[in-house]
Image 1 (cartoon, rainbow, N blue to C red):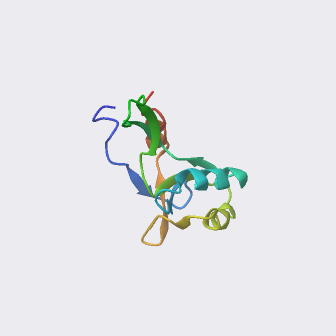
Image 2 (cartoon, helix red, strand yellow):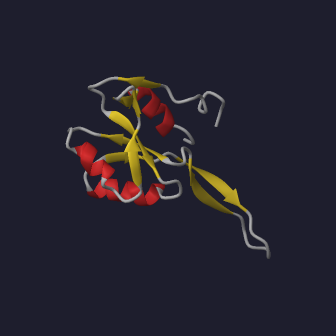
Image 3 (cartoon, rainbow, N blue to C red):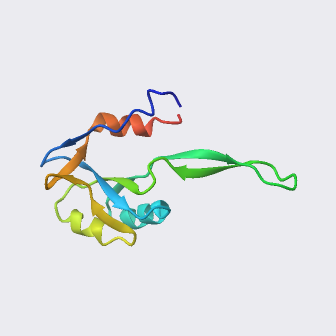
Length: 117
């Protein structure tokens, strides 16, 4: 990863956007992703591999970790998907600013997807 990849996420406020940020319980990212996929909501949980070393001569192992712990990026194509996303176990709320949904730019989503490639 470079410092370019780790820039702060650019979020803009807009009423008609597609990608939103779902705040979730930390450590439950993979479970939330599975439930969102079952509900046909596109979800992005960016991860990175952390090298875990073990005692006793066991070989180190790459363990996936959430890049944004406590957050999931969701693509809601229909307004009713908002209530579906909020009923997922582990979901807290959808990020808003001044009462409007915060929208993540498509270019930021692409940049996040390219981290680690």
